[in-house]
Length: 85
Picture 1: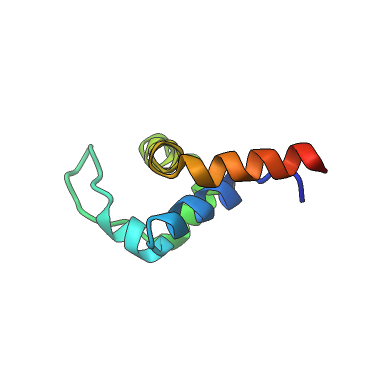
Picture 2: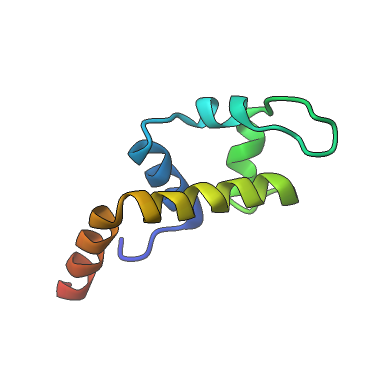
């Protein structure tokens, strides 16, 4: 598989930070209610574009971007591998 889906990118970012989807979802804070934690199923559905939730969507994108900043060697290595294929 050459290009990863967003959900796969999300799972990669989670693994680089040694988090599970449940860990990630339990740490999220709903900006509207202040409630901490959402269901991991909701996070999965948003990451796969099966459901739309703007603030969860932004949190997923932030994690992926943060992984690219904190683990550039992983992404550089993957980029070189893809070029070789």
